[in-house]
Structure formats: structure tokens, C-alpha cells
Length: 259
Image (tube, rainbow, N blue to C red; front, side, top):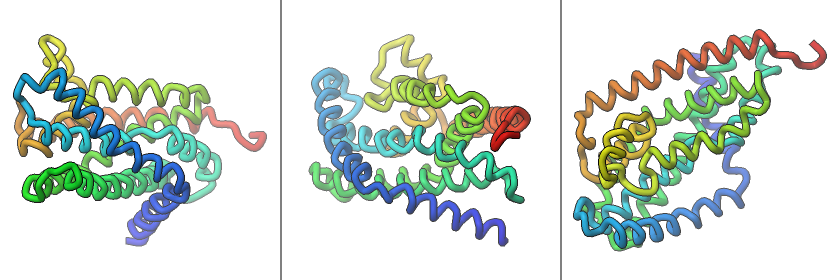
């Protein structure tokens, strides 16, 4: 119980610390409605004739994917976690668990803030409260499991950063791959074949497109909730094994303070 209390406080502190830079937080708030408006209008112009979504549903879809992506894999979090590696080796607590709770606090806390903003923006964009409320509730139900996957991805890069300093340069392109293949800017269901079938089998769609589709429609696209959970667990299992290997490798070769 004492360990659990420590990690809860650690998660809370990490979330509060991440919002000390008020300028970056305000910039994200300003960009949020701009992305929703521009991307929804672009979709309406090029794909509106397909009839898969209404304009208001697309506004909500873009809002949900932005909530998930804007808090997904941040290079600042990776650098901060890897920077504490040397000090953590002298502490009795696991570095992986300690940094994991901190990253989870930042991710979940930020997503709750962004979800609150999304609720307000959906109402301002003319979406009724009756349509807005179910979207927010469904999104909130997915934030906890999706937060764990975000932590595992960030820890993977943090462990690798300790061993190979150039890893930080890979965070941005890796995140952009998830942006493109995850259906952040446009639903994967609107893609033509065979691209749609291929993208639906990739991990990014499970993290962005499927949760957003579920939040809007109330069901997952071409799969049951059980299938989505199994895919998430498989992805988490692979990430846990990779994190364990990278951590052991980084600790074995780590040099700091002259030794």
C-alpha cells in the first residue's frame, strides 16, 4: 500500500509539473479547435459524399484523435525519463515502475484536461449535449487502458535513449508514422482497398482509429470489443518484453559519473 501511495503521488506530481509551462499548454488549447475545424472541412470536401459520417461526427472524430495523439509520444517526456536513469540506480524502487507511474500521470491527466476541452468545443461547434455526452463517456472509458500503452511506448524509447543517445531523433518520425497509419487526420474506414485492410491490421489503428470510431459510433469497426482488447493485450505484451530487454541492456552498458 505504501508503494501504491508513492506511485499515485508520483503520477500526480508529474502531471502538475507538466503543466508548469503555461505557454505550451495554451498553445495546445488554441491549436485544438483549429485542427478540428480545418480537418473536418477538408474531410467534408473530399469524402463527405461517401456518407459514412456526418459533419458533426467528423468534428467529434477529429477531436477524439487529437486528444489521443497530442498526448501520445512526447520527446520531452522521453528525455526527462532517461535523464533520471543514473540517480534511479541508487534508489530502492524500480526505475521502470517509477518512470511508468510518472508518465501515466502525465498522459492520463493531460488527456482528461483535453477531454474536458473537447466537451466544451463540441458544444460550441453546435453539437447537441445529447450527442456530445455519449462520445465523452465512451472516450473516458478507454483512457485508462490506452494510457498504459502510451507509457510502454514512452518507456521503450526512454530505455533505448540511455543506451543510444540518437534514439531521441527517432521519437518524432516514429510518432508521425502513428499519425499517418493510425487514422488521426481521417478515418481508416474511408480509405480505399487494399490500404484500408492493411491499416486495420496495424497497431496504430488500435490506438487511434478504433477508439475514435468507438467513441463516435458506439462499436468498433469490423471487430468486437473482445477482439480489440485481445489486440491491445498482445501489443502490450510485446512492449513489456521489449522494455525489459532494453532496460537490462541499457543498465549493463550504462556509464555515468566516471564509472
